[in-house]
Amino acid sequence: MTDAPRPNDVRARIPRRKDDDHSHAAAKARRLFLQERTGAVLDHVGRATLEPALTAGNIENYIGAAQVPIGVAGPLRVRGEHIEDEDVYVPLATTEGTLVASYNRGMRILSEAGGVKTTIVERHMQRAPVFHFDDARGARAFKVWLDANMAGVRKAAEASSSVVKLSHADTYAVGPMLHVRFNFETGDAAGQNMAGKAGLAACEWIAAQYPGGARYTLSGAMDTDKKHSQLNMLQSRGARVIAEARIPDALLQERVGASAAQLFRARLNSFTGSVLAGSANNGFHAANALAALFIATGQDAANIAESHAAVTYVRLEEDPETGAPSYYWSITLPALIVATFGGGTGLPTQSECLELLGCRGAGKVGRFIEICAATVLAGEVSLAGAVVAGDWVESHEKLGRNR
Image (cartoon, rainbow, N blue to C red):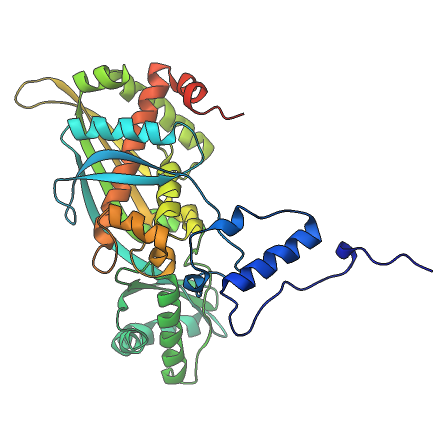
């Protein structure tokens, strides 16, 4: 006679309901199932104010919500093209002590310096199919045909959505293959799914129209979904946006205890270290601002893998009128992938945070992009000052201990 199987000896499927799987009852059934199987009591997970019905299309096997604390930093003066000379208060969802305080300090410094100037250079989302041929000459002939028939490709792609626009396509020949990187404009959505649908429509049209047909794989990996790449640094993915400011030396010494000259020397040191490390970011911590903003506003958090890449550029200057020293500071984000419509942006908490920023809904993605970039720069200023002035560890010990 053998012992009766324990719960974990038997593979049991997670409970699902065909009729109302996004409901309180379904979520409770799954929590009870998990408690029975694992012993974990999910009381806090199940206490979300979120109505389960609202999560359809956002998640499967819903059981509750992860409640991440949200703090607010600001005001931050932003002087952009979609947000013009305006103070904003920025919600940051994080569990890292000192993070909100640090960004708050950086925002004060930048605002007192006159604000952050933001510029969106371009914004496209990619889908990058690869077309297969018998040899390299076949791939070359296909490129000639593709260039001559781009109007038809564009029409087919744009018929897939009322929003998507095919801006341009880049091509890369490798052996008997031609990689094609379609660049789409996707309105207020981040656009990965939209670009995928439009890319498929374009490829199907190409396969039907190209003499003799054309075999393809919808993604040849040059779209770099949720992976950092050097290609994105050069050609952009999502938004390429720049935040810049000029900070008087006297203000830096007053607020962070470090001069412009000291910060510049430290930048030379950190630049060398970034080169040695092969870092995707020669700044300090763009991922901190972006992750906290992404979680608060319903962005796809995995896009941090691409969005955190950045290039910092600084120089010592003098005020043309007074001759007083100042510090020019810029950070370029070449692959910032965000949305103000679709995905998780419509969920209640996330929608409220977007509303706080004045970024909820259609026509607001440019404003949100500029706020993201300005917030990143605030964090760079504050952390660089803390490192150079020597109070980096002290601030974490004071505000970040929770043991």
